Length: 158
Image 1 (tube, rainbow, N blue to C red):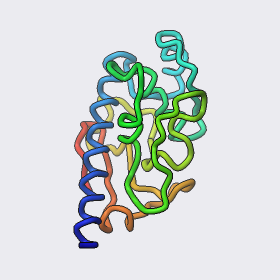
Image 2: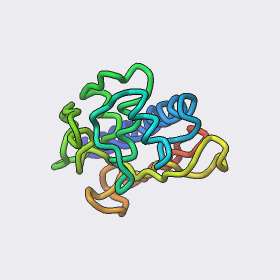
Image 3: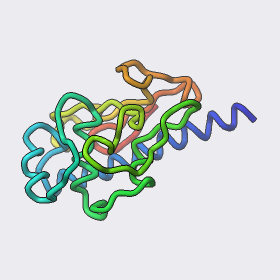
Image 4: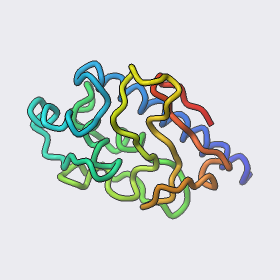
């Protein structure tokens, strides 16, 4: 039973990474590249978002997706859940999207590598996870002993 639950965690992590890949490609269609420092002003101007967008953490960069991607103008706990990696004693997405409450520390299970686009090498990772909360270290215990890398082309590999 425990092994089955862990396998489910890996499958969920993999699925979440692929959904985020779709969101990144949709973002690029609208903004010319994946979220980075230069896309922040345009996201703010187009969406009027009150989310705190920044460049210090993956959480800050990826809030741009919540603000900008078509169909996600009114984010929900379900959408925020795509950024999460399952595991015990972890902060669950709460659907609070005010200021810096969206993708709060502990709600994002992936590291984001900014500065890429679909023109980057296709096997270049843009998201890697699961991570130990608050660090840049992998926590493979959360996903059946595996890590997931989402590549620029949208493929997700272990």
